[in-house]
Amino acid sequence: MEHYVAPLKHWTVAMRINHWAMAISIFVLIATGFLIAYPVTISKGETWLKFSVGEIRFWHLFFGVLLTFLFIWRLYLAFFSRFHADWKDLFAFLNIKDLIHQIKFYLLIEKEGPPHRGLYGPMQSLAYLGLFGLIFLIIITGLILMGAGYHAGITAFIYSILKPVERLLGGLAMVRYIHHVLTWCFVLFIVVHVYMAFWYDAVLKEGTLSSMVSGYMFKKEGH
Amino acid sequence: MDDYRKYVSKHYNRLLEQCKVRLDEVEREYPEPREDFQALLKARGISRRSFLKWTGVMTTALMLPPIFKPMVARAAENFSRIPVIWLHFAECTGCSEAILRSSYPNVDDILLETISLEYHETLMAAAGYQAEKCLEEAMEHFAGKYVCVIEGAIPRGLNGQYLRLGPKGETGLALGKRVVSKAAMTISLGACAVWGGIPAASPNPTDCVGASKALGVSTVNIAGCPPNEVNFVGTLLHFIMFGSMPPRDGEGRPLWAYGKRVHDFCERRPHYDAGEFVEEWGDEGAKKGWCLYKVGCKGPYTFANCPHLRFNDHMSWPVMAGHGCIGCTERGFWDTMAPYEKPIQEAAIGGGERTIDNIGIILTAATAAGVAAHGVYTAIRKKDKNQEEQKQEERE
Image (cartoon, rainbow over all chains, first blue to last red; front, top):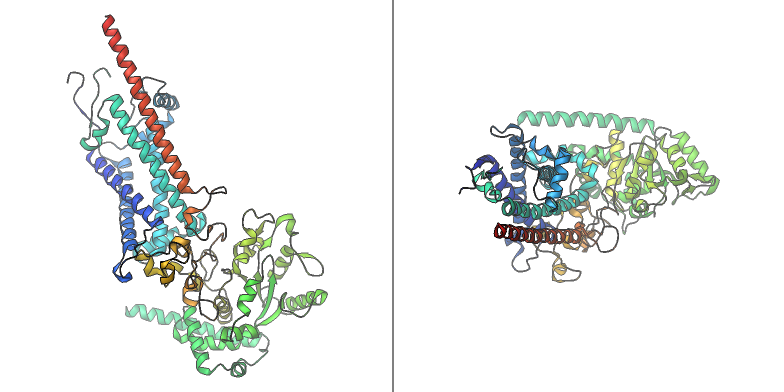
């Protein structure tokens, strides 16, 4: 391959594991979440032999707690990763000139995007920071909803801390509603995120798509 | 564990002592009971056994250990000593109705019959200036001792002029402030008095709010539309026994009554976990008494003791009767709990049939269409570019 130089390390192992674990958790959470919002009636069989909604809620809570820990891990990596603590890259959108250039590139007005300055482009950093905000909010509302139903251990302890937040948001019903609205934000994020990954892979040909598995990106010689 | 038990027994013994001191004080300071409670119970055919059972139930409801049963009985005997001033504002009088009416007299009803109502706009015989005089006298005579019960939201719009009461046409806001200022304890009874309830539902042209917010005082909030009589009687008993408000949650509701979620103590809960739901009214599931979540039960978001205590002589409650909970004990009741016969996520946004799921589906479809168009355009541009390059190469 004469056009390409040696692959560049782009994502650490921790970042890749974190990414895919989060992706799986979020997919499971969206699926089980909608099944909790619109539970399926199972008419046949004895009541005491069935536990479908109970099981779905269990897995929803399981992956919810997993997502909480993954999010804490991701924040740790953002600040204290030994290879590339990327918290500064997440503020790439503050470069307004680059941001406008990037939007023009995405709208197919410009032929070339702004130069790569960090791990993320300006729009990308905005999207990921937004995603972090979304995850934070959905975890908080989720922990409130979990605490309302389980009155023991660390769950109860967290619930007692979050009780004022519940009041602030206007009661459990509103917390539940906000949780549902945030789910749709995740769905929208996934659609755009997956498309952009494919698009970059097709347009720039730098191996964006496979980089989240292998960890390496490729750079064209001319750049 | 032994230390824990010692601590607990020490704590409750101290509480019991406090309670005794307080009851002595009540018997000394407050006027004599109007009627002999034990004689009244006998006259109404309530046996001693039934009364003792009631004290047991009440002690448990108040989340006190059994050693407090004699104290509850003593408090019940002194119940009619406590002067009560009962104010009505923007409401339907349903809370009074719910508390006063029942098919046969039980101990709670007899207690509420003997309650020393100094002023109650619906029940008193006096009218006009005479009624006003009753209020003035009660406020003067029992200053700092009486319990003020507020029923109904208080309109603040036009400086409170949406609600005028009495012969002098005093605004509800002014009357409330005047009466509450001299009360030993203020009880907000019912959803309207607690958060404004239906009078405060959107668009709320009269700017109704709950009593606590309108009058700027801390109240015991007996939420519900209507609230359970046991919660009201229990709060008064607690006041007699301890001379203070019961421990309250963040919303000002007594913890002993509103500390648990309806969903967790619902008799239909096993059907929820088993995935057995009523899909529409009168279907097979409804006949079998399955979970009402899909027809809009708000039990999962509501803190109340309805499943334990029930209504109408503890006979039934909404979920038992076959309609979901409507969340009437919760903040912002009416607006936040709508729609009542659909799950909460199917609330209409900005009127009509627009729900968050409809908006979500449309936005997702639009985004998908947008990225597809973007992809197609990118491909076309690429093709053009390739063709141009080819042409250039050919030229060269």
